Amino acid sequence: EIVLTQSPATLSLSPGERATLSCRASQSVSTYLAWYQQKPGQAPRLLIYDASKRATGIPARFSGSGSGTDFTLTISSLEPEDFAVYYCQQRNKLTFGGGTRLEIK
Amino acid sequence: QVQLVESGGGVVQPGRSLRLSCAASGFTFNTHAMHWVRQAPGKGLEWVAVMSFDGKNEYYADSVEGRFTISRDNSKNTLFLQMNNLRAEDTAVYYCARDLRKFSYFDSWGQGTLLTVSS
Image 1 (cartoon, rainbow over the protein chains, first blue to last red):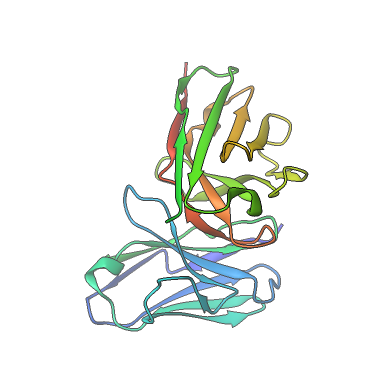
Image 2: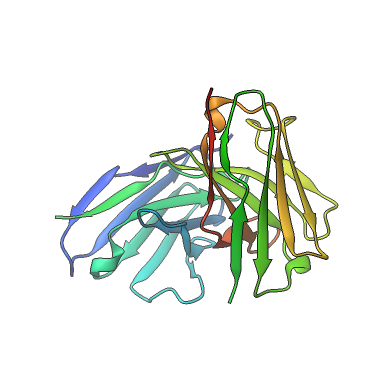
């Protein structure tokens, strides 16, 4: 089973700063990786799929990169509404990473 | 717009059964595979099951295989999850989610329904 490890567990930043979140797979998933955002009390929302494709309606400040085992979600300039938990997910067995909590510094 | 509304959650004793429903609207239901994903309180996300658009194929997480059954009624735009022999570790918010393509990603989600398994 492919395990996804996200780092850091918690990231403390200020609005306007750049956020870089990491997801590492225990074996190659090619580019079959997605990122989701979840706010408290809400369902997750698809942000990025196939490692770098933005989902419908997702702002351009969100970008994804990587292939194989190492992936990155970048938020170029944090808006107040971006503080949330972020999960990566791969399509083999549809497993998720443990999440990164992005909190206001 | 896409709308997914889950129902059927509640409190149930260990070993008992429950069926969840997910009513879909705003898209052509019978052209999309559909999933159930769950989230235990304060924990991360766990995929549970998927059914193909036509109901011919279904797959399960190891943790629920043999106890849960996914089904759908395309005439009523509804997805179901029959859960038998429930355990305390099945306690979670259960989300239904639409498949983006070929059992890959989840592009729309419902708001979830809470199942609590407790004596």
